[in-house]
Length: 244
Image 1 (cartoon, rainbow, N blue to C red):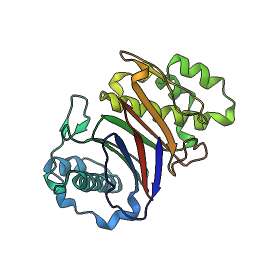
Image 2: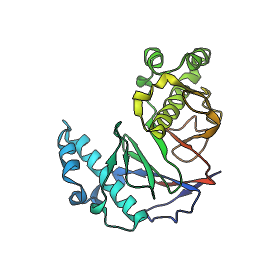
Image 3: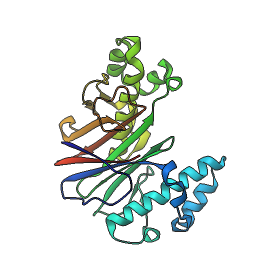
């Protein structure tokens, strides 16, 4: 079950066992609220590697917000959080709180759960990003056959539907692109609920997948942003909070 709540400012909602919190933020509205002193030395160094200042500032803003939000859930100070990373670069904290992060343009998306590890993706819809060449690189043969059969006016929404769903799934697995985007298949029709059709080394029935627009509509074909969330295991509901 998906529950959508729109809010003007951040206030940590109560996280019940069996729930996932999906949180969407507009970074531009929070730009004057960040204290970079909460970032670790490693994070400061990583920020310094960005070539352009606007990209550096956006990354630092997202990282500060991540620390503050997670600190609220953990009831600790944001600068005390220590991130661990698996061999594929996926961050984690401990076994009491699972999270995953994504951002696109000026939006940040964060998913939090006490029960299951998960993956999320948010993408701003851009017509110039879509191409048959990119689809050939990332889509499975099953997805490509269905994608090429679509009418031309449905391919943009279909592409971002498939893209966000696959990104969320491989992030939930925890292996990133090394898992192999062609090793899983989802449905290609953006006006249908997201469905995992095939995935190597795992039972499809064990996985759950949702795709929605920024405002929370599950069939968000006209949305400027597409959002997907994936997890493995039993969950009661997904609570989607927007701070836009």
